[in-house]
Structure formats: structure tokens, C-alpha cells
Length: 289
Image (cartoon, rainbow, N blue to C red):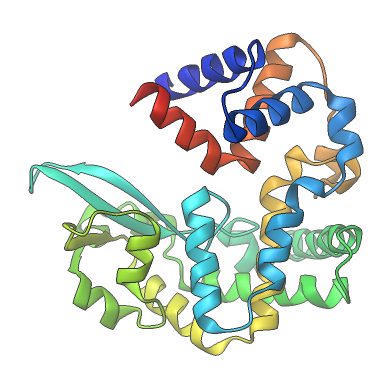
């Protein structure tokens, strides 16, 4: 909560003064544009073009891992996430890797009842529409590929009850054990890209079997499947900040911009955090850390 207040104060102050350098200029422009709902509606997919081009540029497994790590770094939707927690046992900090979320809840992705089937069918239709708006070729095929990969990941995720069992989720691994568990990822490179200090030798893995399965899918699934999955999850995760016609669900498309000033400022801050997280984090550290 304190961090959110500081970010809001920083952005509102930046909006009232001349920016110092290109980073502040980009953040100020983005924040002021997001305050104007009409500008957001006219922007189309422009804020996402750079990320979509990054996805298109994935041509090998190493590039896929680098991009997945990039998504973790920016806090965007990814099949694996990480955080740094205080660790009372080692009187320092611990790096925790945990399973990422899917485009729908696990019980919907794996459900066999009619309601789950209808939700998956609606999602496929909406995802294909969104991919078509983004200019993707064969959007229906891409949506099916993305859903198929997400179902495979959902099968590997633990059910909620198991995930609440602290005896099962606090798995301490050194980096060699982590590499053996999930060899498709070069973990020392991942930690370096995430700017984790080299002194960190032990990490916590919440769901080891999930991470092992993710590694297998990184190594075995076609790159075209992964690119489709990454396009869809990018558009899905950020669709609330896109023009109404590009939002994934009919409910989101019915939500209007504008409203009271606090709501507009909240949306604008969310927009900047979604699309300019790296620049925002850098400026925040300079200002408050």
C-alpha cells in the first residue's frame, strides 16, 4: 500500500513539472495520455507493439527462456513467477519461484462439465477475435494452440489444497539441484537477468513437479505454440488497459473510461505500471530507495 501511494505521488508530481531525461519524459507522456480515456481508445495496440515484436523474434529455445525471464522481470503474465521474501532461517532474503496463473482458473481449464466447456469455448472465440485485431495469422489456430498449452500447464499445477500445505511448498534447492530439476532453463542466467545477487545460492521452489513439467514443455513444445501462447497471454493480461474493442471479455468491453478523477488517476497509474514497469521501477528506486 505504501509503495502504491509513493508511485501515485511520484507520477502526479511528474505530471506537473518538466521531465529530467528520457525516462521521465516517457513516463509523463504515458501517464497524461492514460488520464485521457479518448487517447487510450485511439491508441490501439501501439503500446504492445514492442512486446509483440519481441515474441515474433523468438527463434530458438534460448530465446524463449530469455523472453520468459523478461516477462517475469517486467511483472507480465508468465508461466513462472518469482519474489524475494525475508527468510528468518537464514537471517537474510530468499528467492521464491512459484507457478504462474493461466488464462482461466485451473478448474475451468480442466473441468469436464458443460459450464467449463462453455467458458473455454467463449474464451477461444474472444481470444481469436483479439488475435485477429492484433494482425496475427490464423487467429483461431493460434488461440487453440495457446489454450492447449495452458491446459498442459494447468494439469501440472497443484490443486489449491496442496498449495496451502507449507510442508510441501517450501522446497529449498541449491542452484545445481534447481538446474537438475528444470534443465531447459539456464538458472544462473535467469537469476542474472532478474538481477538476483550472485551471493544467492539457495532458492525456494513452491511446486517442484510443476517446474519440472514446465521445463519439459519448454524443451518439447513447438516454438509456434509458445509464440501463440505468449501473444494470447500478453493480450489477455493487459486487455483492461487497451481500447474497449480489444478487451478480451464482453464485460471488460462494457466498462467505460473516465469517471471521477480518482478513478481516472488509478487507471492511469495501472496503465503506466502495465506498460512501463521497468522505467517506473528505475525512477522509483532513484526517488525513494
